[in-house]
Structures are given as C-alpha cells and as structure tokens.
Amino acid sequence: MNHGIVEVFAYQETLLIMAVFGIALLAMIWVGFRRWLQYKEKMGRLIADQTAELTSQYGAHIESVDARLKAIEATLTDGGAHPTAPIEALQTNALPDPKSNLEELRLNPESPPEISRSGN
Image 1 (cartoon, rainbow, N blue to C red):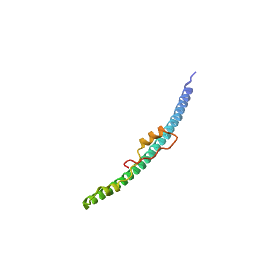
Image 2 (cartoon, rainbow, N blue to C red; image 1 turned 45 degrees about the horizontal axis):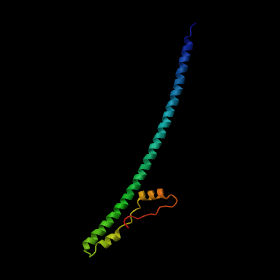
Image 3 (cartoon, rainbow, N blue to C red; image 1 turned 135 degrees about the horizontal axis):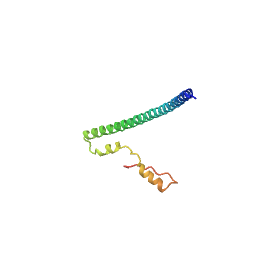
Image 4 (cartoon, rainbow, N blue to C red; image 1 turned 30 degrees about the vertical axis):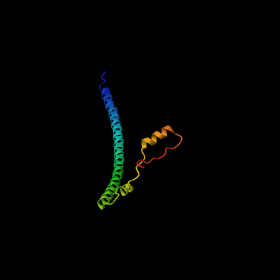
C-alpha cells in the first residue's frame, strides 16, 4: 500500500500546529515586551520626578546660601564693630541628625525621640 497521501496530511498538520504554537509564542513575547516597556517608562518618569524634586531643593538651598553670603559680605564691608552678631543671626536651624534619632529610637522604642538641633 502507498501511504504517501497520509504522510502529506501529517506533514501539513505538523506545520499547522507549529505555526499556531509559533504565533502564540510570538504573542507572549510581544506582551512581555510591552510590559517591560511600560515598566521602563514608569521608572523613567519616577526618576525624572525625583531628579526634578532634588534639583528644586538644591536650588532653594543655593538661594539661601547666596542670600547668607550677601548678608555676610554686606556686614563685613560696612565695617561694623561686632560682625559676628549679624552673621550668627543669619544662621539657619540645621536638620536633626537622623542617625542619632535612630539610635535613640533603638534604645527606647516606647517613647518618640527628641528632636535635637545641631549648632544650638
């Protein structure tokens, strides 16, 4: 008996199954790529927002330093008798040291730590 026609149909059936699985695999790869791309876009936006916030904080800090420097220059060029008094009045309150507050919290977890101001 000649089984040639059966082999042709089996070959075509195999090609069809391989094509279906290939298309399904390509669809899964495409969906994964789209998710990865959305993730990268979201991370890019978050990094850009964080960078913008840090830049604005840096700008505000530079402005305060610049104002303080101008006040110091004005005080020194005026030739006042005690230039340290106006300079000390310009001194801003520094932020509390986070490491010391963390250590206080570890030692005494029931009560909140006192906020200490450095430089005072």
